[in-house]
Image (cartoon, rainbow, N blue to C red):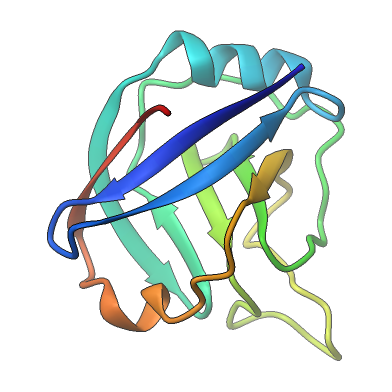
Length: 130
């Protein structure tokens, strides 16, 4: 099952589409969809954007210690969604490494990489169905 959701950045008047896919983490994707819409804040860690703690609860499910550019993941340890636009501070040798294992839940549908530079730390985001 695939479903499009949007991360809306009200301060930028922009949204980023995400194609959720339950192929790797079906229980996590189900938990995300059941908790929409979500209003939270977004933070930066290198070229990763991640939300504050959300109401989504999911355990590690095929969790990965390395991700690809434009992957979207759920971080069980922080109950947060993560958007990977590039390396994190602990990435090494061309690999994108999250803080701790994450459940892959989808892909960013556009490579608006500059959004990481333009979004302000702790700014509001709304995540909802497209």
